[in-house]
Length: 124
Image (cartoon, rainbow, N blue to C red; front, side):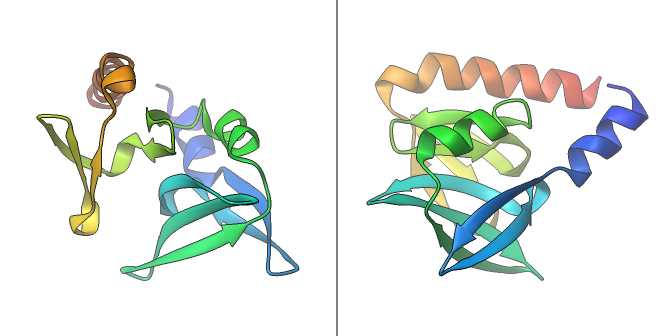
């Protein structure tokens, strides 16, 4: 990956509507995005603290915006920032900050391949 592309990916942000406000969230701060009733919940890291942002955008919209930004779907209910993955063992995904998420059987092969591809690109 070229340095210019790497800088572009680090600067990429999604714009969402939350509590009547329009906010931008930088991709490198997102841990994962999960489905919620009438929108999504975005789990982010801000100044070494984990927090969540509820937004009105649909899960499909956010998946589309993030698909080329190092995210992969680990379950019907959530997509994960591959750069925040610390481990994958027996269908359980470990993220930074002690978060553990299940990888569904239906998504396991696809997610594992996406993770390996991401790591290959990142590590050269």
